[in-house]
Length: 496
Image 1 (spheres, one colour):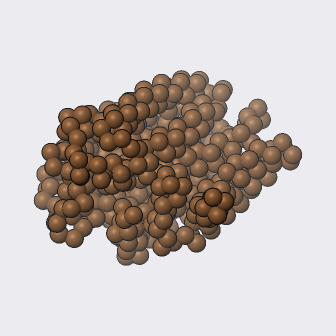
Image 2 (cartoon, rainbow, N blue to C red; image 1 turned 90 degrees about the vertical axis):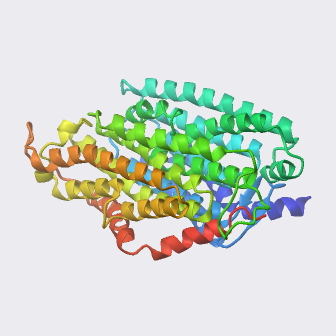
Image 3 (cartoon, rainbow, N blue to C red; image 1 turned 45 degrees about the vertical axis):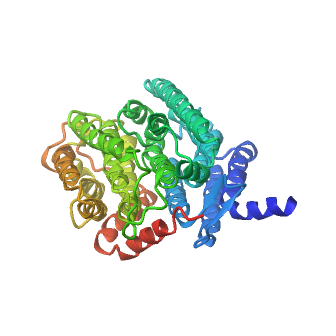
């Protein structure tokens, strides 16, 4: 028994490191009472977790009675989540919202680590109970962080709306899980697949269960119609937490959704071409995903056109990007899933970069309104050019990494003969270019109405900005290693 526990714990060293880091952050705050010291402890813990993660490369093993899966697929998403967490901690060191005298940063950093731990567990969950528990750990931590800046007028509102929508989505997900358990008698997604393949189940009840469970996943990835919390929470939360939710929370949600869909509902006896899957006969979940994908990208882009707050604009942009990534799931094959992995890597850098610029501008001028960006090109040239590159990448134009991400998504759809959905994606990208261009126009083509004094930023801020800018451009020019890594992780995915 002891040997089995030690064997399992060897495979969850990154998670153990994050747990210790969470406790260490609280102790460091009590003992040292210095914000930089607490942040240093958290950064050290995240780096240690990352080292343990790298050591697991190529490993594929179920742990704790198949509750968790340690495989290249989960490793890929865990890496994205840890990198995002490191950047968010670095953002927090210079955030005016977070570094106010009355806020206890010990709890803030501890909650960031707890949220990271929940999302890391989400990526490897292969049991419906584990999926729900990891989702709740992430959600509860994010509820508190969304309302962390108590003085902000919209902070409490953001947190309350987040709790209400989260509770509703969790209830729907639990109901779906209970139906699926009643149909199959197990919570293990591999065992569920075996029961569905050998004994079958009522197709209508199965579809209802699948849609209800999708509500929980849709809430985490901000997919329509589970997106209503996103704009208000993104606008009311500190920019650091907004950036974290927009990338890491989506990564955890997508990893869990992809594993659930691939393992539970794919016909393992299907003798199609290599890398092509088929759903269990009579269970057309991909049709539901197509509808959600089209609605998500279309609503996100169209509503973003009318936004005047840049953070809220990026919130709707984030919803639209969830719609783009859902297109990869519709393909039902290795190409589609690999395209989603590629897109997530580039999305991480360009989206974090855009939110970091919003935070730096807000620190200096105290506003997130789009009109506040008038004349920014002359007051902060490097910052403005960086923001332009991030927005061009989010649109999906060459030579940025965003172009590569969308290229592989659209190529997967075309190879799967779903050309009309690729066209919808391209048209939505054109709409996104319009509202991103509004920011370009204000930065470079409009004169500011207030001060024209140059904005100066710390060297550390410029270094962080550069660290996000280089991959955004570099992965647009040289992307072969990323593509190969994504394809390898998908090829090793779902094998027990």
